[in-house]
Amino acid sequence: MKLRNINRISTAVLCCLFFAGSAAFAQKITFTPQWTAQAQFAGYYVAQEMGFYKEAGIEVDIVHPTITQTAYNLIRSGQSQLTTIQLCQAMELINDGVPLVNVLQTSMNNALVIVSKEDKNPLEQKGIRVGTWSSGFDQIAICMALKERLDYQWFRVASCINLFVAGAFDATLAMSYNEYYLLKQSGVKLTDKNVYRFCDHDYNVQEDGVYTTRSYYETHKDEVHRFAEASKRGWEWAAEHPEETLDIVMKYVKKDNIATNRTLQKLMLEEILRLQVDRESGQREFRLKPEMVKLANRLMLDNQILLNEVTYEQLTAH
Image (cartoon, rainbow, N blue to C red; front, side):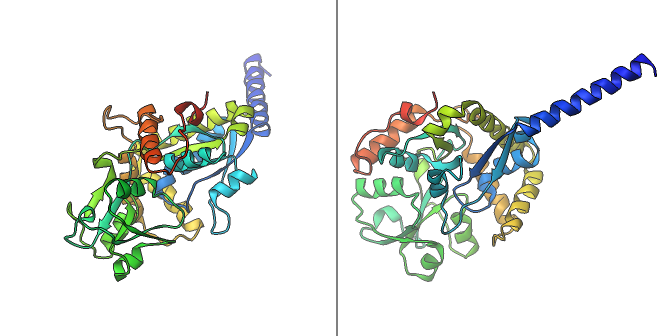
């Protein structure tokens, strides 16, 4: 056998051994998005399907929450190591003594809207019945209503869209990437008058980020940072390949038997990607902004949602 062929065989064997060893020692991480499968989490699905996590030397299991097992419960019990949480929710949890660390920020803008009945401005109505989610996500809306002295009657339900369409509520909270389009599909006329977008006023607080517990971060810094970088890569790929990303999203949607369709998921993906672009820089920065943390603190402290300030240093990995 020629020396050149022997060298080729030796190189191939070494490569096989290297990758086999890498796979054997890959750190296992369970990641739980805060909701069921949808385009809101497209970047993580992409990172999994395109092998970005594997290339980073980590083995990721994406486990969605259920009615009985929320993302927070999975993190708290140690069954999951990473999850997505909105900034205001994370701050509330930290204020309640749960040490969480932001390791990747995906949202740069607030997606919350309030929709009232046709031709009625939600800020010109006092004491109206407003639907919101039983799972939360409404801290900024509550702050706005208290500041404006609107005396809203809040009704927490699993899904407020159907009740609003049926006339049980005078207004409802919605996410611009989700319920907003469901309302549109239901025939609700959405105009600048009856839709109040929080990001266009003084309430543009960042939302989704990836969080872990402080204890897990301190003992697994390298793995956590590799997960964050691979996830960021997934989101960047999603922005460049939206149709291929939708194919991946629909795979997860069908696997979990989620009642949706490609059209809605496309609208969601487009809006999620738009919200990731910082208004000042025009870039996807993937970072928590200190000024956003200050704004969230001021709003929630003023309205007694927080009892103590949650600092940027408490929130971030360092």
